[in-house]
Length: 390
DNA sequence: GATCCACGGGAATACACGGATG
DNA sequence: CATCCGTGTATTCCCGTGGATC
Image (cartoon, rainbow, N blue to C red; front, side, top):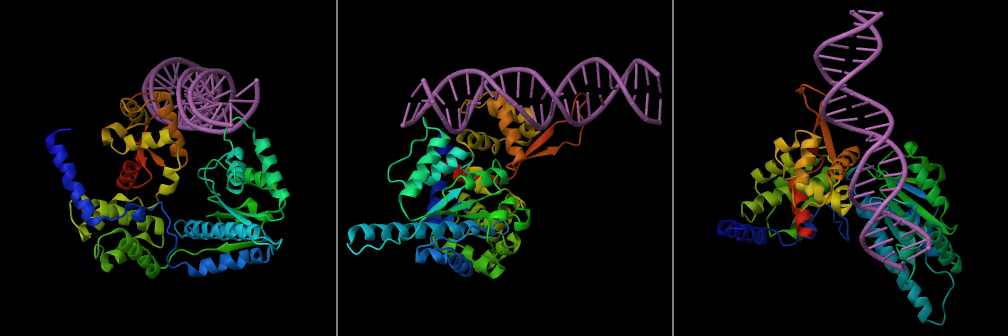
């Protein structure tokens, strides 16, 4: 790196430090402890879960709503808190002599984005319940499942398992039905997904479904302003700009937060300490409208993320075909993967919408026409978040 | 020795096009 | 004209292998 590059890096960092106080609070893939404006949804989930406060289990249920409606935000926050309450009350029972036998059930959150095998599913649940760590290798799926049964049979208290992202690629409804059937009888599940209950085979086994609507514009502006006030310098985001982002995002909090992040990134690069109209304009152009969730992108295996990281830096020429993209990525010394694997990754990621294959109009002499590789997510947001994590 | 899972590699299949054939 | 064939590329699909871990 030459001196100019070093100076440039310092210059940018200076701008960032003035503008961004906390990237974690700004990240579209992070959820807040206290979701904004979703009180009614929390109430309805608590209504559903109410039996747990009498020591019994709620029936199975399905929570559904559109992309970016805050389903995951609410369920993660709620289950985190309930798990805490549950262990506290458990400790209390052990430490007092007037222990009542009706303990609160346990609460486990499972994200199917990063849990895509039967083994991983039971492992995740057991790991959350057991005091000792559960081995990830050397022991078979059946053994893990048996241990889970053992753990739950031994105690009278049951468990409520929130299973988020049931639309995630790699897991289908039939898998889930089988996995759920393999849970002990004193387990209740709460599935979370985007599809209408009528389209979800799982719903044959639910007693209730809970609909979550998209954010209203007013609420979405609140969401943005709250994030801005905890992550950015004072007055860094004006209400008018928040409104513009919210209008554009049309009720989708993921897209709104991604746009905010991109706008902040743009402003920081220009070493400004507040977000301007032009930053928002640039950001809205950067975030694809029907993008895939950045959560999906970051849940990919490490090497696929690495391939994407290289991909976002490629120019148009290197993206003209899958083969060209493969070669460009494979040429990078930081990538230690065979071209065949890189190419397969690209096709697999296209399959789930992380990247998009677009038919090129021009036909080149021989053979089947190639397709261009485009990104299904906001490149600047991905790049920044990726680099922050390394 | 067992187990899970990411990789690698390659076979099988689909598609595009031009030219030959019926 | 409709269909088939050969060649070349794109895409999909499958399975064995090996690292990491217990």
